[in-house]
Amino acid sequence: MSAPVYNRVALIGLGLIASSMFWAMKRAGLAGEVTGYARSAETRDTARRIGLCDRVCDSAAEAAEGADLVVLCVPVGAMGAVVQDIESVLKPGATVSDVGSVKAHVIEAVAPHIPDGVHFVPAHPLAGTEHSGPEAGFAELFDNRWSLLVPVEGTDPDAVQRLRDLWEGMGANVDEMDADHHDLVLAVTSHAPHLIAYTMVGVADDLRRVTDSEVIKYSAAGFRDFTRIAASDPTMWRDVFLTNKDATLEILGRFTEELFALQRAIRTGDGEHLHQYFTRTRAIRRGIIEAGQDTDAPDFGRAKKT
Amino acid sequence: MSAPVYNRVALIGLGLIASSMFWAMKRAGLAGEVTGYARSAETRDTARRIGLCDRVCDSAAEAAEGADLVVLCVPVGAMGAVVQDIESVLKPGATVSDVGSVKAHVIEAVAPHIPDGVHFVPAHPLAGTEHSGPEAGFAELFDNRWSLLVPVEGTDPDAVQRLRDLWEGMGANVDEMDADHHDLVLAVTSHAPHLIAYTMVGVADDLRRVTDSEVIKYSAAGFRDFTRIAASDPTMWRDVFLTNKDATLEILGRFTEELFALQRAIRTGDGEHLHQYFTRTRAIRRGIIEAGQDTDAPDFGRAKKT
Image 1 (tube, rainbow over the protein chains, first blue to last red):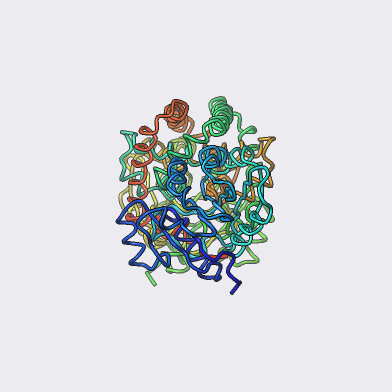
Image 2 (cartoon, rainbow over the protein chains, first blue to last red):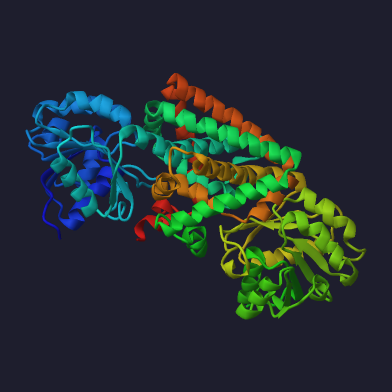
């Protein structure tokens, strides 16, 4: 058990990330009291039933009042509205953070509403599953994953360090980078791959000459890995693409260019080009396993489960 | 233990699929003796060392001679050459099969070399991992996966039934379909997804403003699922694309069209279009889990392992 890093933490929004944060904070004793708020009454009821948060409040302001740390865990497009609900109750010396997948837009939407004397330290934990909602969370979600802190210029270093302590206490590794670089890195590692997976699943669903039941039965041949990604929360992802537009479109442009080159190699029968390309991509996979960001078990270990 | 389905089985090529077939046949006692051959002396040595095959032979003809079933487990582009090495030793009443991911091309390359009195029943097990080689195989690989039989017109029904018994004995479900439909279904569920994954991994590697080490560290945000697919055997996949050219290019054309529509929605800020699209793709994922072709464990269950 660590000493609490914050006496009072408020989680605004109670989905996969917030609920995992709650269980991870409890696991390590990182917070004295954790309050929570979700816009939907059904989510609040679920949270109360499963013991998610020490106190579930009926407004964001009630949850945030008196908190030492307020974490905005809502879709990126809702951050601006939420901070306006709580700005008047934030206590001096408190820190506001978030867990949004896009950083420049969140800073633009949230920073103007942070009162003097309150710190704002944007963050983004690179962890998740294809499940969403308050019951999807678990304490181990952040273990050995990266959480990126994106402090704006002039932020109090002590406030940044304290948030770093919290994330490390929840099991994560922490890096800092600026917002624009964050948004480009995430466009490559997350946003473009998600859009591509959504697209491929949509194509399979549309194709009239192959039935959905064939697609589903024969998915183990590669397709199912795409469907896992494409099952992620639609609202969250809509907001990501709308708010990280430029970087995502840039990467998709590169992707299309490269795909056309490979299509051309297929059409012209250029086996050498294909073989070289496929050999190069294997090395990246090896790097990911060595960096501890995935398992080397064949088929993620699921092949041996029946 | 079932009774042996074939007295003598020969496996030509000793990679992931052949080695898994060997262990799966041994598990259920489906074959009296299994011989094996691989072109590389190193692979044959490895096979002898790990006990893969009852007898490892130094030529394909030696392995195939006297066999009741000969299974071609080499890359699709090598099938035609391999069958020419063994056609003179095939015994009357024997069955030749294969495990290639493309069927029309394999039939075209192999069928002309099948002697009178020998059966030819092409097959394709939809199972695999990102690992390859003789040491990558395991007996459970085919459990609850689909194996597709693609018999050519006029094939002896008893020969088809016997091969079906073998695959079912190795744990697989079996379906039959014709070669052109197989190649289209696989273009959707496997070939196009693989090419797309290879492309995305190549783009990430190429991008100068994001380092490889950033891509690797932050891959858990979605990208790593692509890298697993893109780590598959380069020779096998080169051959797949070159021999299933038309269906793959057709699906990639549909994919590009759909991707452009989504890019346009991002550019114009059409959140409704994105949200609807992402909601629709979730249903397919549900179907795959209900069909038993994947686990519902979050993040394939790897999130809880540290």
